[in-house]
Length: 179
Image (cartoon, rainbow, N blue to C red; front, side):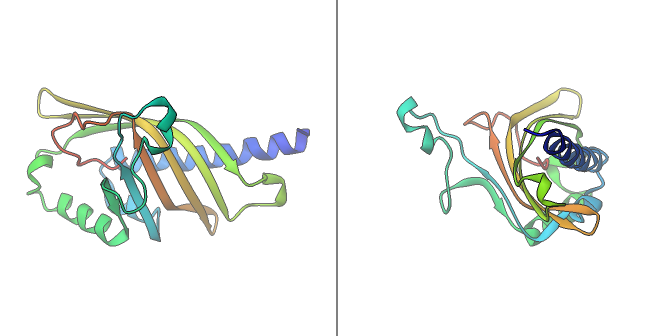
């Protein structure tokens, strides 16, 4: 790998990491309407179910396509969820949770950054989301994400996000946070 190639990949990765850091700050700060602005109008926001499968069947560890999912949403459903949170009467978020998103292991899967500023990138990352509500309710969400980001001007928007939770039984009382 040439020095120019390594530098271009490093710079693109840093740009995407900064985008994810800003996204996490918006979510942790309960600035959900601003977060919605980071989403492409055609977004597919999906968290398939995890299953316990044999080692020789790992291709089926997570549900796909039209199979059941924890959620499979587009921009309108996400806007409705944000509007509901803003009402102050969402039973599982009143009082609101305290949440921290930690995003790490950000890797650009393609394209070759030497081809110029890409308009679309596939990204993998890992996350840990800590959620605390009331005095003692704690939930941890840990897993992997696959994102497709599309360039809009000088920034990015999320066109696709698939979230792979590293548990097959939801241990939280409710799934109210955005991952």
